[in-house]
Length: 521
Image (cartoon, rainbow, N blue to C red; front, side):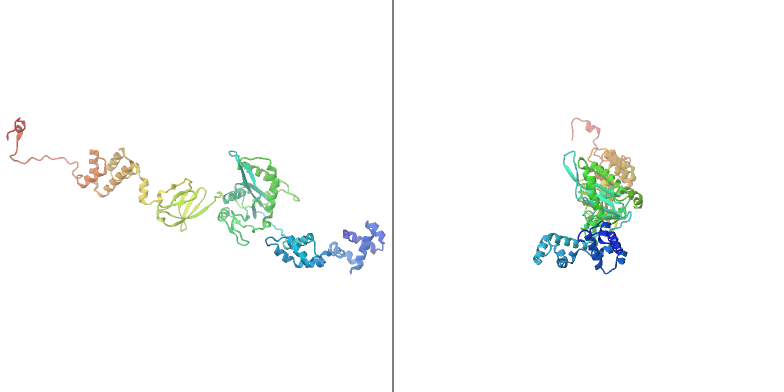
């Protein structure tokens, strides 16, 4: 029985013929086996404690264990010694520079008659495999989405410069149906990662309950076996889509074995089939990837009567949570101090954004996206601006300024005419004539401010008379009106003049005096 063991069904036939009293030659001829094999099995049967009827009643695996107890190598003294050192060898393999050949050399120094290097490695590998068995995970439909980046890159050629630009390939799959998604992005940065993940969810047409990313920096800031720190942008993304992030354990690819397998399939069904094609921009590359991934999802799976797409559409897609109406925008966070000019400086844009002047000197929180900048103080939103990338520019809202600054910015001919019209028609006429002069606008604005100040202090009738006098004299200045009011000339302006007679005296020369040619004293 040193050769290959015979099937137990054939051994049972042998035992039945022997029980019927048939000879060795007859049994060997009937079962097409050698006589020595028949003798060996009959000798082994005689050594067993069970009788032939009891042996015939046993199931084939149990009966096989009676005749073939196992490999005697595991009962060897050499194996017992090696087995006692397995834990030591396992710990030593974790150290830097320690490999199996070094351990085998140390083993042979202790046991010169021990196993060869091949047998030593075989038994050690068996022990390491037995220590870490694999578990079969049962996945529920629409429960998880496994996420990863492929190790190898795709590329396209810039049509303008001829530069070959490498791209990272984002890969994801639903473990229940094994439905896959892939697209190329320029990098593994937070913005590119979340953009690809958003495209994946919109391609699926819904949101799973859990997102299972790898421990890349765009998703996990600090890896931990029990409580990993999720990137804040990733948390914002999950909150926007109303899902949860549960990263895979660090250095445990078996946690997301299906997406690891999808990456291998992408190498064959996408990378290899696009190897002879040249692309000149990222959209055309992604379009080709999408076509090959669609063919991959529609390919009938081995040992299963369906394709990935069929199983996804029939049992999983309708269970996904609905997508939000608004698309996700990546949020960035800053905490800044309000400057004396009631603006905050966003260094990323090199731009200034205004906040209400009452917050000058305090620290505020900024949350800015691709399109908006929001400013918060003590849990309340105090300002919102459209994001601008103009270097050294200012985005200022007039409502955020104090009254003096607001007045300064609102100055214009229309502003002063409207304000003067509410106070006096004569003042409005005077200011209108004032703007008709060819003077620098800043000078005119200051003159208008002075006139409005005089109007608020002077009596309305006197001020109107002073303005009329200035119009009559065509002297359109603040100083003229002020002098008229200070000298109280406005109260007599417009009154008719009365002729008063001269006093009687003797010092009258008369007409003859001026008509003479020679003066006589």
